[in-house]
Image 1 (spheres, rainbow, N blue to C red):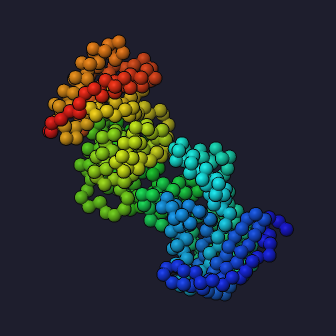
Image 2 (image 1 turned 180 degrees about the vertical axis):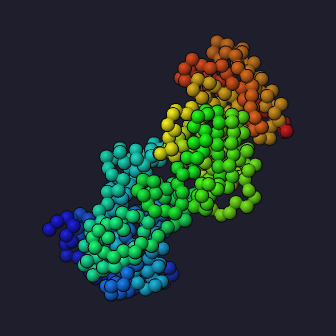
Image 3 (image 1 turned 45 degrees about the horizontal axis):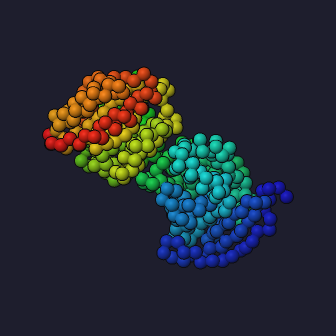
Length: 427
């Protein structure tokens, strides 16, 4: 007996299964292939030679049992079983031991821990586990279908690997897309499936939206680009709104001005060529944005915290979107009532957003901070200048000798700025 030869199957068991507010009689079988267990559940005639609607489902405790909104598999299982019940014909093949694409439930928990606590990308997680992205075998599926005398299938799936496998084993297969709508919770999971596993989802991934923005700024460190889109509801050639900034620091304000009144339905996402400022996030939240996506894996903790406070998902999507040449970023170091402090390589910038603040009031507080810097020459030195655009004013210090020195300088500047009150006055 090979690993794909089934032990004597258990069944049939006849049970009324409740799907779609009705009870439908199903026939169930249990199969064992070594340590690989499968369940077959079907209703109606499936051995008459007509294509059988079929769903292959890998076990997922998070999606099927605990109803995780981050997974798509729970809704896919629901939709398939309700379809079978409604039409009185269909077959489910359920891989009991295929959680985490064949690695098991313990690995599934470990995968979530690494992705959430360490902000690791999928590839990095599976490399850490020394495991393939998809460890599942479908050989048992062929054996079960032969046991059930099924030769022709209408496969509900967007996984081309399953279709190819069944055809290679001699089954007649017609593939029917089985896609769930994107939402704020499952969006990244579904896009990872398309990018990593080649699933035939109809929507563009985050990478598709980011690439044209990155191409436009690749050779200009001060330029930045943004677009707003509803993934799954358009194409990358026609976002809802676009904006460009050449160093003035007004990208978020310009994108807000470009937004149409009628935005349609779906999850509103902003894509950025560069890290946002903390005050930009507040403007995006006011627009109704749910997710902000950037092509960087290393997002400053204070920026993540600012997004979380506003209820925004700040998604790192470096993956295939890593810049070919290093692209220094203004990285948020600290926030104090009077200002936000950023570092880019060896340069430190103290910034006052102009939301509800008159430019003159912002410049006055920066001048006060600048004078304090001069008085503390032993560790801060002289400011280089005060600048900015329509959305913020900033004070920039003369360059530190090293990036490490700039971080230390930024931290001490934040301590100094914390002694000042938030500027008031309206424009």
